Amino acid sequence: MLDPKLIQELINRAKAAYEQAYVPYSHYPVGSAALFSSGKIYSGCNVENASYGLTVCAERNAIFQAIARGERELKAIVIAVPSDVFPSPCGACRQVIREFAVDCPVILMNGQGHLRWTSLKVLLPEAFGPEFL
Ligand SMILES: [Zn+2]
Image (cartoon, rainbow, N blue to C red; front, side, top):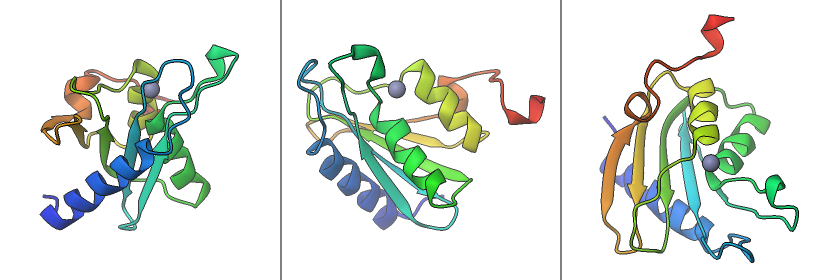
């Protein structure tokens, strides 16, 4: 069970991250904050590119920063947007989350501050993971 203060910190970090999003093409900023087993939180925003296919999502940005600092076990992730419609991680991000968690809470927040709780197992059932190899 996640400490409510920790959830609030994840939310704050995800919101701060979307303020930094580089989205000159889609104008769809996204922020993410990922809690790892060390207790540390890593955040990221989406970063677009004039060569559209090189765009990286907020979730992967946050997770990759954590991995670069030695983290391996994802405990929870928040994805926040300033718009009304709840965000949802794309297929690529779901698979990247699965690399570092068999299951974990995935908390979605819209611009009104409303939360929608889901989980990796709901978002990516019967997932392929590293233990298959
Ligand atoms: Zn994605």
